[in-house]
Image (cartoon, rainbow, N blue to C red; front, side):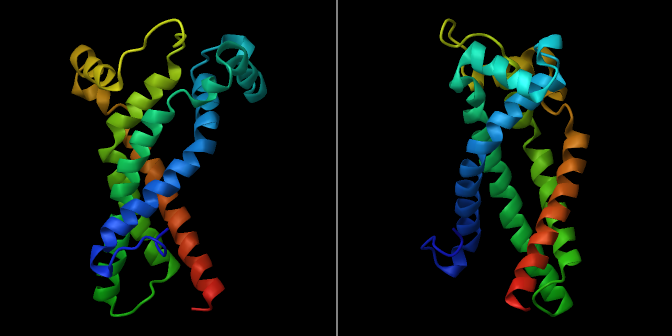
Length: 200
């Protein structure tokens, strides 16, 4: 997407945001069903009946049909687009600044990994309220075909009003640490592979 988005070089941050957003929407088509099963298992939503991934998946299919696997798709996309819109432009900016400071390009994989870790951590911390909302939506076992579920904005406001601002940032430390580590590995390996394949 970075190569095909028809934007001039001075609009590189916008290009990175668009490319990252399109990539995340595509990834969510695969990620959301696994996330639904994971959250149901982690919270024992189905009790002993959902003790394995396969059993939990069967229960989702039986209770909600195929659409059950995509419960929370909208909020996941709403979380991922701001996340990647922060992470990737920040990552590219950090790489650029580090390259200028070191006086060489491209960066080594471990240097890119540090940039990826910082960018991922910042994006993770800032988008934690959306992650909290996403988890709540995925764990809501009400049947949406029989009961009208409240809009996402109302649910977000309800968390804030009933539980306080602190609840919107529940899990911020593990989320930030996990994504910082993931950003370092993912983007460091990515840069290493790209440079290795291109013979740089």
